[in-house]
Image 1: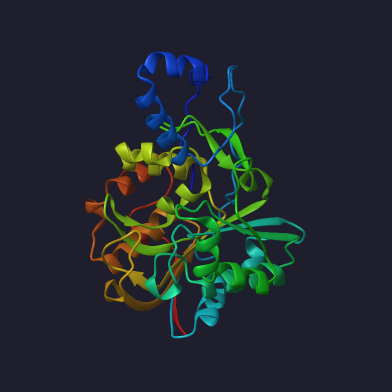
Image 2: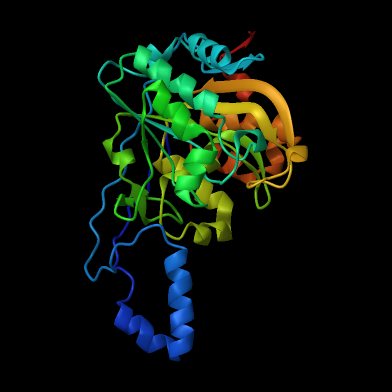
Length: 334
């Protein structure tokens, strides 16, 4: 799918120095409180820059389209690994996406201090199955990583993803304060922004979101999952969340999206907590069109595409099709 032309970004000076910030803010007590809040909301602990930031865009992870292979697969079943393997086989196999020796970044949702049954994070069995498929395809190195919102150590352990990914043969990385690279996102809202270094390292990117309700935009799916690629003050982006989601999807372009709809968080997302909000749907959706996969996945949340503005916005930018039925889709039961 052709991507939108990215606008040229005129680089500007970085934010004010701390001295200027303190001088302008005024009262010492208010300064201390404001500066503490600023620090707590930031993932990057880099010093404030006083020079012009030179930043490069991310590489395009998308593969050339195939005129014969399926663009999307939908698999239902009761066992996770066979479902994931079947979903990839219907697309032509993992070998279609990963070449021998390539460095692969697998990006699940590991944002929250929750257990797998609470469906706030990607199912660890889905992640492990993808790691094994990448190994089978001959990947040179596989990293599993995310920028968590709760304490990363607790998120990676309690989600079950750290153990599952390591046992399957991946290296698990928890980004720290110095693990971000200023990147030209070339978006309407996202200009130069700190991106986890693994996105500059990888040859291929597999996005592995989970289907969840979201209190602000109605749903968090594949494109919204890309928030976990960036650091900085992400809460600022919620002021125009639909535009920021499209900016992210245009800048961070996965090779493959594998949607986890094994357990679906139907209410009180994105954090969840109560098992009463979780419904088991036992479905995996995989493909190369992130807009179509998000659009298809709305059914699990009782939503329609017209209720989710970022879908039409993404299609208008050339990122995919809202009408997934226009694609070559294969479905299976295992």
